[in-house]
Image (tube, rainbow, N blue to C red):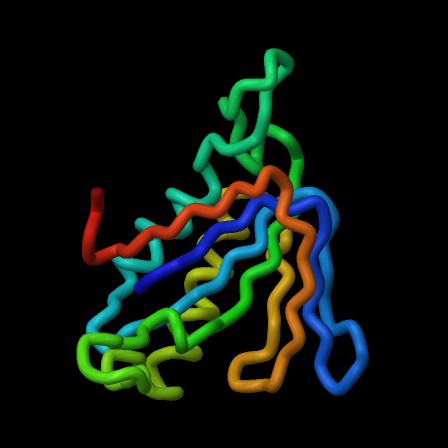
Length: 150
């Protein structure tokens, strides 16, 4: 499982021209699910995202989490995070989980975020053609792979 965390001033998801969900200050998290991912992967990433200290404290040092600042979270499924670019110029998505695994894992990740933060997680719609808008604050962007815990 892979996530891309972006610290945002605002973010939203539109489907067919209508805003489906949106947040103000907080995190936009893009979520990619692989076919070998488990509950443990989702728990690891949800805990990391909720507690990642990437918001400024009173001294301007990134020392606060989304929980600490009372921020919001928008999580959007994105199978293209699982792209393999090893051969040629056309990405392969062979590592991406199919619908039957990816949907429950994405939902689980969002539920675990809610458990960690005590706040609802805004979501995109799995498999929909979404237009994601964001104002990256910083910019701050963090990539975490549950299989490569560096």
